Length: 252
Image (tube, rainbow, N blue to C red; front, top):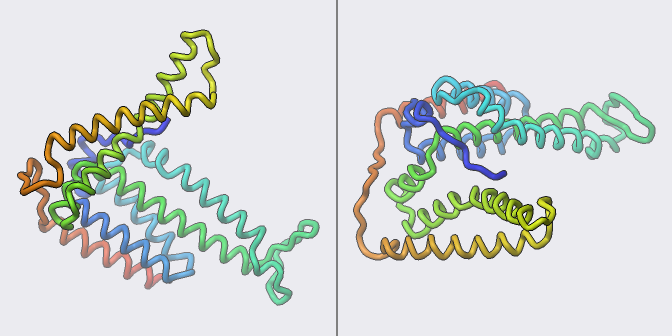
């Protein structure tokens, strides 16, 4: 079932939870852009370790929750590494150093180095993204984008409404399956479930659109219930993130 991450009060009141979501978003984008300019192994590994340690210590993220969030993406990283080792272009280079040969398959050290570097970058992206998601409230993120980044409220809160509607698909799918079982039909997968999900999605969309229209989103000046301001904590975390990036490139 699709579900949004459940954030505890400890996570929202932690150091990373109190930092502006826009600051954390800028740090995440800066780190990921920095990884695009290196093919070394040390920088992505260092950033991944720092991100996970910061999430546990500064974000108060429970270790089981963090593992559940990053495990699927780490599986993707493993698939990326294996596929690039098997199908790496360096394997066909006669000048490359051969490590193993399995039948017609030739594995070279250059292909392994390239594949593991790419996999570590995927691991770093997964780690940074998981920590950001598990320490950031979606509503506060939308408020920060509107108040601090100057994003259009119509777009920001529209995207927030869409994000909050995604887990409802899982709930609707469970309801439709239970309804089929009550009618004596199979409760497993059936193409007709797609029609039911589409009808329910349209109904939910109509309700959200009417609610946003009743609150006059996108028209005239608006008051703010939740204020998001910059503070010394944002500066400290931003400087620390720059030092981490510099240290990662220094290791590379």
